[in-house]
Length: 331
Image 1: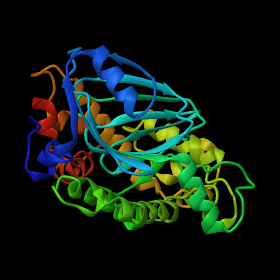
Image 2: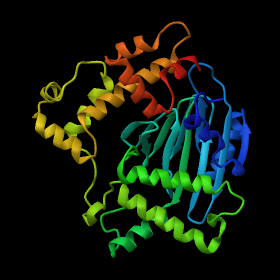
Image 3: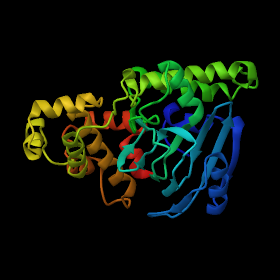
């Protein structure tokens, strides 16, 4: 059982009418998940080497709404998805996502949208439960062509890999997706009506295209990729989050101006403060999750990772991961 209140128990109840299976058998889990998505490699890693998986899934018209948990630390390598997009939203836990040469740490506040043409590799924590919206690629790119009024002359659709779902339109899109999942648990619902489901899917596709930056945002076809100095800054923060970073110091190390660095971060929808806070809290989560009981305290994990105000840090931790730091430590 996941600890905590409603925030933590909801993943256990979503899509309960559409549970396909539960299993601790690695081969069966791999085979059943492949039926929904694509063939892939699946392996356990880390301490505890166990599996306690469940999969819930409802196929609509051009989409499928899925809730997946493995109940163990797993490595997943699907390779290329090719025919579909996935929007993966952790409801608890976290996942390391690598799509081609890009990689992010995905958690409750940061969803991911890997590119179908790039090799995908993921590492999910044992407590990771993800709501995954699978969207047929042909349908989504056709919807984009209709919005643009011309063919996709600049290549296939490419979303920014990380999707901040804590505010704005992306937060709204997450709420609508959760509404879909909740609605599917009712015996009678509009999503089960063939004459209506296409309109609802179209709204969800339009919302995604308008909420999350992509290479056709604004009709320009410009790539949303970050500038090299921004990628370097984010990588440095994630590699050394406990350091006493400031924008000025980070910019000096990278050999760029502080203003230029701040502008580059803003262009991809983030800030220095957000990246540093998230990197530190992720390190705390990883340390608490991996710790042998009795070897570390929450306050020590905070201190070791540059978080000085523990009460404020604990509140931000719960906002990101949906649980208290002590819950992670004692699970």
